[in-house]
Image 1 (cartoon, rainbow, N blue to C red):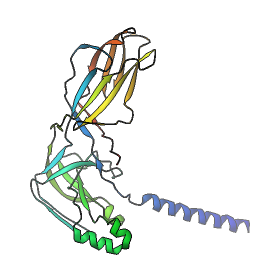
Image 2 (cartoon, one colour):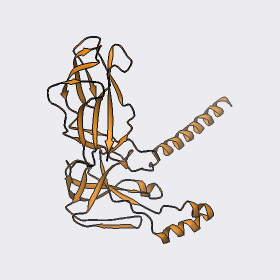
Image 3 (cartoon, helix red, strand yellow):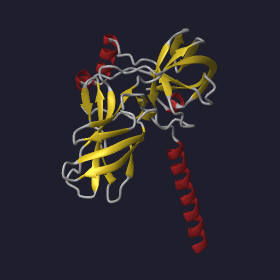
Image 4 (tube, rainbow, N blue to C red):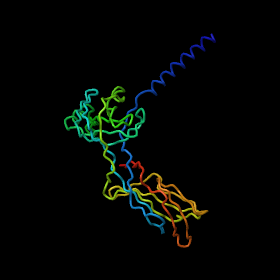
Length: 274
């Protein structure tokens, strides 16, 4: 009897493990998020500078997210979602976490709002709740270059139903050109602002500020500290190396040097909460 119970336990455990494995292997529901943006050379002063509290000590322009310009046309048809992307079609870069191979960037077609007719159909299907919150009947193709050879060779269909629709699939290789290096405009930049001691005796504070189209956007951890217990001392802030050479505790004025500027580099722009 004991052996039979043991065998039954082993079978149940194996079945549970198989269920967990199948669940873990299930294709994720991909979400399109904004791609990281490049930092372009800015207006940081070269050499040493005298910084008073509140002074901007480094600036880097925010670049536009890269876009892909098709050189070869692509025809896609996944689950009845047909697209004919002609030569010179432009795709915006995006981040889609969880895609196998973890491609650093994907290029997605422009998101289209559903037509009024489709929205009404979706609303009728879900009754009064649907009328108040109509279903967004939208799918988007996102393409990527899996081996970095300047050809798009895989795609996923965002918004598709079922695992077969969400799984990445190979496409005929299509050449593309990368458009990059353009400034975002509207006063968009990343700044480092010297904040003095900020209430602490043995460290100086430097705040990172993100400005997009003239409006401040909060960063997750904007304040950075550099120890001044022994000078010279340096800190790495958003990729920049800021060295404190001298500090006057009476005036809070510091003599600093930017040994490495903010650019080149990349920045993940925090998603704006509604």
